[in-house]
Image 1 (cartoon, rainbow, N blue to C red):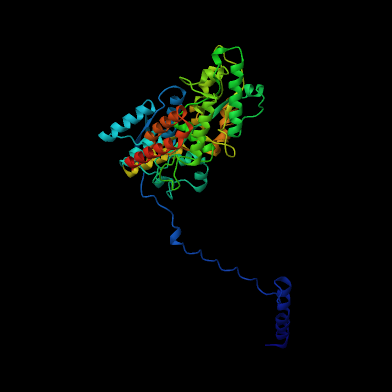
Image 2: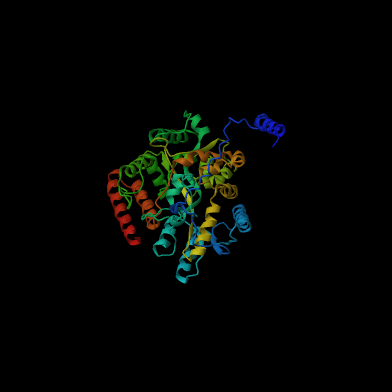
Length: 464
C-alpha cells in the first residue's frame, strides 16, 4: 500500500468513532434496563373453587296454594305471580290457586296430606305448618336459607325484623315458615279524648294505662248518657294474642327457661293476670259482644286491642252516624322500656316433593320476599313489611296512608307468639283460663295458671 493511501485510511479509522459518538448514544451511557419478568399468577386454591349447584330448577312448574282470591289483594298476587313467570331466569312457572280462608286452607291441606295430592308451596299459620312438618310433609327451609349458592347472605337475613323472622321456627329449630308479610297487635288509642281528659301523651307504663282507662270510665259515668255507663276504658278480650302481647310488654313470653316448653307461671304472665283482674274489678275494662269498632268510634272506649290489618274497619266506623271526628292511632302495649306489640307474621312454606321442585319453590319465595317485590305486595295487601329495607321503597304508599304508616315505627317492638304445632290447642286454653281469672278471685290466679301449664305440657307432648 502506498504511503498516500495508508494516510487516508488512518485518518478515517480515527475519525469514525468520533462521528458515531456525536450522532448516536454516548459511549459512556449504559444500555436501558430490561423490563422485569412477568410474575406467574398464583396457583388456584382448590378450597375456593366456584360452587356448582347440583340441582337444576329449570323448567319446573309448581303450585302455590294461597288465601287471597279476591279484591285488590288477589289481583295484586296474580300480577306478581305473572311477573315472576315472565321474568325468572330458570323458566319456572308458578300456578297460584286460591283455597279460601285460612281455615279452608288447613282443611284442604289436611285432606291433601291423606291423598298425597299436595301443592309445592302453601300459606298457613305457623302452628299448622309445624303440624304438617311433624308428619313429614314440609321442608325445613333452613336448608335453603343457608345454602351456599341459593341461600341468603348474612346482610339479607339481618334485614328481616326479628319478630317476624323468629315466628317460623318450631321447637326443634326447624324453619317451617318463611315470612312474607305481617300485621301487628297494637292498641288503638283516642288521643283527642285522652287530651281532653288531661293526658297529653299515650301511656308508657301499666300505671299510666290504668289511670287513663279509669279516667275515661269515670267521665262516661258522670255524663248525661246512660248508655255509656260502665264503658269508656279498655275493651278487654281474653284471646291468647292479647295475653301474649301484654306478657311481651311486661318483659316475658310463654316459654320455659330452656325454650323447649311452655311456662305460664312465670312472673310476666302472672302480672298480666293480676293487672287484668284489677282493671276488670275496678270497672276500667269491659267486654263487647263483637268487634269494638263502634264503641271506639263513639267514645265508649279509650283503648281497644286490634290488628293493624283491621284498621280500615275502624276507619269505616268513624264514618258512621254518631261517630266522633276524634284523632286516633296506634300505640304499643305499655310496660318495660318502649313496650311491645305482637308480630302477626304470615308465612309461606315448601312442601316436600323432589329436589328440583323444592328448589324452584324456594326461588319463588326468595323473589316474593325480596324488598322490591315485597313493596308491591304491601301496596296490594296493606300488610306491613317483614324486612327493614322494604320501608325505603314505600314512601308514596306511606304518604297516602299516614295511619298505616304509624305501624312502621312499632314493627321493631314486635315479638312472635310460639310457632309450635301444640299452640293451636294451647291458644284456646289460654283464652278459657283468662276468662276464668276475670270471673274468679285473685287468689285463684296461681292455681289456674298451674292448670294451664299442665294442659300446655300435655298438648306439647301429644304433638312432639
